[in-house]
Each structure stands twice: as structure tokens, then as C-alpha cells.
Amino acid sequence: MKDRRSELEANLAAVERRIADACTAAGRERSEVTLIVVTKTYPASDVRLLHELGVRQVAENRDQDAAPKAASCKDLSLIWHFVGQLQTNKVRSVASYADVVQSVDRLKLVSALSAAAVRAGREPVCLIQVALDAESGERGARGGVAPDGVEELAAAVAASPGLRLGGLMTVAPLAGAFAGRPEAAFERLREISSRLRADHPAANMVSAGMSADLENAVAAGATHVRVGTAVLGVRPRLG
Image 1 (tube, rainbow, N blue to C red):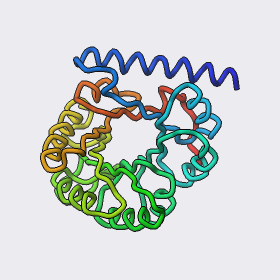
Image 2: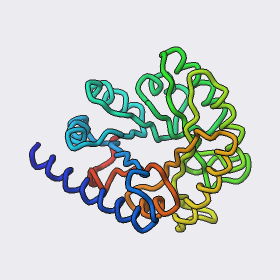
Image 3: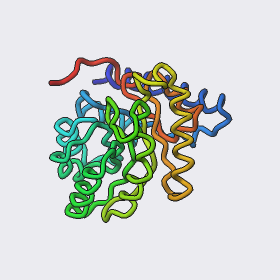
Image 4: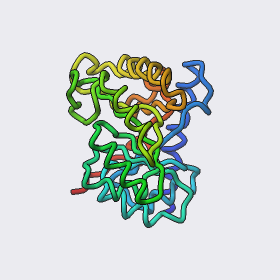
């Protein structure tokens, strides 16, 4: 366990340097960017070590992994993000522990989340996942709504009991006009975010960038970066 703690500490320090350097290059303060460590496929023991090392925001993408992990770490002061594609039959479980749901991409999901949040007496923050590889009216290959669907979804979240509209999330697309161009993709997200804030000033979260492209995201104004492999290492998928 001591070796694992040292490994995580060194990896975290390296990621922190990358974020700090990216902020400096972009003329931003380090405090403007929040690190979320994506702990998918890793055990609760790693979450505990990360907490010891100062991490306060963690993310999961599968409810079957996240729910027991969140339960076993409920004594820790953590903000839990759900970042994976979310099926409506998992909403009740996710609403019980997720403080932030970053993958809201359809109206049916909004209504299901609202009902589950009210039932649980919770008020998760919701981010609209924007698919920059999707045509109008379609969903992206990795989830998300096409850019022209953001306004409708945002209005639905803002009007739904038990939910708070936090902002936007995206994943750099693997296909389409922005494939292989993460900074351009994240700049596009910044443009969409600016329009969203005209109607919803408090929806100022911009979640973008992962281990391979966090610098591009910081340069394009991301407020949150989601880093897994660069902190935790490479681990075989579960299931």
C-alpha cells in the first residue's frame, strides 16, 4: 500500500505540474481549473489514498462500479461525478450518490433524473454533454447531444425540480470535423458555453480534457479536467 501511495503521489504531482504549466501558458490562474480524478476500474482503496493526498473530486462512468465504491467511501469528504452514458434504469441509483452528473444528453434522462433526485432528497448538478461529432437531432458515438440541442436540454434541466444546471461537458471526438483536433473541439465548446451563459449565467462549468489532452482543454477555457490514466496508471477493463 505504501508503494501504491508513493506511485499515486508522484503521478498526481506530475499532473498538477501539467495543469499549472498549461494555466501559465494560457494566462490563467491555477485556481481556475479543478482536477477530477477518474477512478473507473480502480478499487476504493485507491480512492482513499487519493483522498489522503488531497483529491476531493472523483469520477466514475459505470454505476455498477460506482455505487459500491461510493458507499464504501461515504465517510470521506468527496464530490462524486458520474461521467458515463447513463441509462434511465440506472438513474435512481446514480442519483443516490452522484453530486454531479456530467452526461445529460436527452429529455427522457432529464425527467428521470429529476424524479429520482426529488425522491432521494438530493439536488445533483447536471452538465449537458455536447457531442461535437453529431449532426442535428442525433447523439454522438460516445453519447452527448448535438450542439443545436443544448438550449432545449438546458432549459429542461433548469426547470426541473431537484436538478441544478451546471454547464457543459464534452469528450474530444474520434470522428467528424473535430477528430484529431482537440483544441479546436474545446474552443467550439467554449463558444457554446458562452451562448448558454447568456440565458443561464450560473451554468459556468466547462468540463473538457483528459490525460492526453488536458493542456488543450485548459488553453480553451475548461474549468474542470477529467484525468484517469495519468494519475492511476493503466489497468485492464473490468467486465
